[in-house]
Image (cartoon, rainbow, N blue to C red):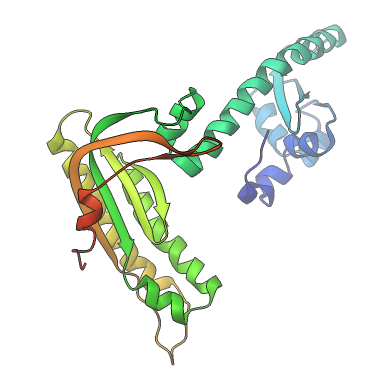
Length: 277
């Protein structure tokens, strides 16, 4: 079980049996209708209201994480000891199956964050031979951050990271909201695609809507970001976005022992210098 950073400090997590299990690995069993259990874990109040008479949370040991199975019953008197023993033995066998799927999901999320989920799926399927790949028809998105070089010359690295993150968030969030997929961040540039699954017109409309939304989001970021100085002038985020419909080839390129999953592009990249939005 992996807990998101934002959740670790939340009361919902701190006051939940899961926190103790993740941190200590102990099995927790409580009677939801007991005041002491409700004071210890407020979730017991909800379980008692639902008529639950017994609650048990059993850790499933993994390689470097703890997965947890929780189970509750409405049976009078709760679980019998023999039932708890049977469940514990069953869950130990089940733990190996859970761990396998947990590791697969972790791999999917990690690769998806760095390669994009479409490319990640291909890599996990074994498409890792140099030169291997296939093509799809899509509306291709290439954007860059205007005045990036000038801002890099005058801003501290930490401030530049704030600007880049705000810029990429505005672009990538808009792309995802309209069914596209971000493939790469290249310096201050971003490459994304809107696959043609129904028709070119539909993919084109989605890409244009995403571009409009990205610009609006970028303008909103300009009103909230505080980097630079009033004396030196505060930087303004502006983006150039190129959209082009065509074939995109996904493939592995690189040295025999070091590959990248990439997308060769020519015309969209050449057009990238033209927008001035």
